[in-house]
Length: 311
Ligand SMILES: [Mn+2]
Image (tube, rainbow, N blue to C red):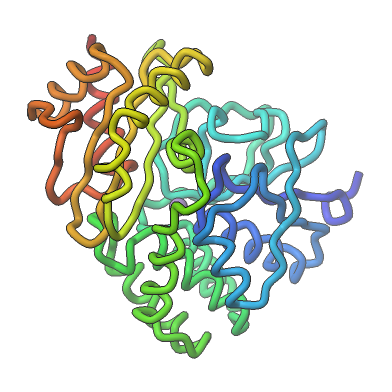
């Protein structure tokens, strides 16, 4: 079949976040402009922050697609297939800013990964390189992807390229990034009507660390009072979910966006020991408190991976 007429799906990671959804939407439009038959989809329902963004920008949320047969799939914002509904055989391209693990393909594919604060920044870069004009709607979506992933340029993952992209996109979209960030973080922090399980599973990533199946969940909020008020429910839910999903290790990080600190909760004693060793810190009050830590990708997953693969 002709490459330009065969359909290409563009999808971000499971438990989609704002960066993964806007990246899929904008990149699918970018492919369409090049005459390709591309469609953005999401694998699960979006979170409150992403819903806020799409409503505010008056954009249509991509439809949910739960699996692929033999279709061509372009991965954005992930490349580890434990975090995807795609399989190796589907993957025809990757645009990402995470560690690389596991993917194997039969044929050469487009593969672009850079250690930037967001995939949205990388798509902005690609569009600049290609010389396509960045339309207002695309700029607004990419802007929210950067704001979300870099916590409005305050996360340790932020690079000068993210700063540049944010400024330029905010000009094109005519949207003040600080105002947008405030609204997005409020939406992200709204846990009302959610069960403890939904909160814990709302943003999870599964990893192969050596031969161990590890899951690290995260929730970002402008206040962690919910977690103070529900600590027993949280610890019970972690144990239940770990058993049910068959994870070897299950960690959960609650990120305080205002104080820029993380709490690491462990599903059991094994996890607690590993986390204490990984972060050189003792658990106090049912969690390990890590000041200055806001990024799972850069500050939480790598130390855990190191300890788990050596043990
Ligand atoms: Mn991302």
